[in-house]
Length: 132
Image (tube, rainbow, N blue to C red; front, side):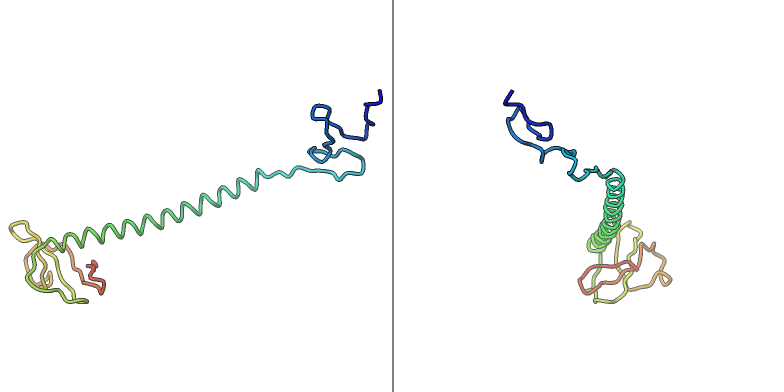
């Protein structure tokens, strides 16, 4: 009977230790009340905010990627077309399809010729063709 602990002492007989500090509840009358916070609402708000932020960033990157891909395609198209002059940075040029279905670059404006116009472009300082 001498091994029995008083009721106000928290003793774990399985581990043979005092473990009042490990309990998720108050173990004496003088102990502070432990309340479990409801974090579900905070987690849901946080998840929604993070998802919205990531989705917005993804859409921004997708728009940039699509723009860059379009720029790449135009540059590839222009550089594979025929032209017999050295383009000047900042000048406007026009890309056409001739009767042999070949692309060619010209200084002549679309209203001054009868070829099918693909578009008008200018060469920027980074030597990248930009669509006008």
